[in-house]
Length: 188
Image (cartoon, rainbow, N blue to C red; front, side, top):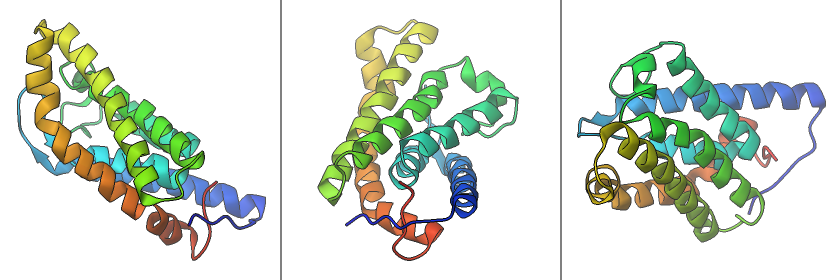
């Protein structure tokens, strides 16, 4: 069961900033676990993205992913292919942008009814769908592929592994909160 504990304002703000930084860093590290596929690589990033929203709450999870994408936009080679800002105009752009919305959606759903692992898994699955929506639309626009090819190349190979990542994130959510905040405390 998710627990919340009173905190002093200064302590709460510090914990929030640390949490945001930790999940930005986890997303960067998850990009390094990559299998180069075309047109988009397989990475562990969706796990970090979902977990950021579920553990930090929708606002801070979204913010951690916005910082990640912002660092890429500044030219840092933090994406899976090490392209830097070029990753935001290519086949992976929509997926990267989708990370921001997915963390927000998964986090909001967990905040509003994610007390059980299966509920958090559904929130994670919704986040994955958000990533796919952003990713598929941009992939189609930049590649000119028809929708069946976009599905076959950019979505279908990832569905089962990403649903497993959503399940892992659902299971790790409360433990992640405890690790960052201390026993019994939660972000929201």
